[in-house]
Image (cartoon, protein in one colour):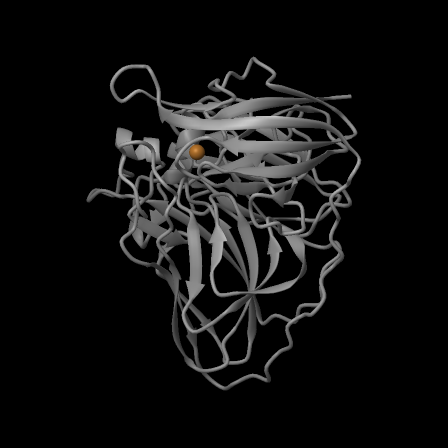
Length: 422
Ligand SMILES: [Cu+2]
């Protein structure tokens, strides 16, 4: 397939100069199966370098694979070949550009899409609808241009005035009482943590970051850091209109930059409208495919330190570092032996939360954040806290990156490299 990044997206019902993949925001939903080879030609018709990241896929970072070091200059194209292993989890992933320095700008401008892996072990879900809810945020000016962030908002991680679901502002989702819908919710926001709540409902979470949970879990509120995904089963028992909102979430703040949640109240994302003849209430699954358990033969432990704060670089000099350094693509920050298990303690010395994301090699959360019991790829590291992760590096040699998924922080240098060597 071909993916063309170019201006001219329709967003929130308006013609804009935002960017789109293949003319739409979000871009086309890519549907793959374990064992597939994704051949994608990315054509760059925007005015800055770009590239492609298949977020959450456990695939090779090498060559023309899921390689964050590639650069596609304006006017150029690149042929990606991404082989999905036959044992890949079937679930919800997404894709977006990952060219260091402009990742936040390009996603804020509309470049993102869903990537679903079908097939593989899956529960028997008799759902009436299977919906992707790719949530992004942006700010448009009166002329339909995407607003540039202030310096302060880059420091805190920009949040857009418009929170969109599949490029639409507060769309309506229709259902029938009793019917079960699967919602594949993707937090594609540059910096915004979503704290999802559906009025008068609890929802049943069945997967996190594309992997089925050990058991279905009832949720009143579902917190998703930027990059996280959750698959939810939603069933309305009665007719009515129910708002899907994101509650204010306090990510903390840096020094004098003002604290508290960025939004004063809940942000309405969509409305679920249940109407019509009631369907026989479909059963929710009680069992899900058996999860992988954290392997216990740890061969090496490391500490990774995320820091952000007022540096010594003069007035307003704020640095975003990992282990005291800003990103350098030429440097190997961690060298890992292929076919080993490692345990990483990710320490956050700053006064705001940072979502930690490792490409290509998903991890188990052991302590410090809710342990989902499955491999995941983004974990919110709390302010002045730490998380302990167990990471199987049992396949895929190659170089890739780990970083803060507040993408403004990543662009400001809060990223580092990992080299997994045979
Ligand atoms: Cu951060």
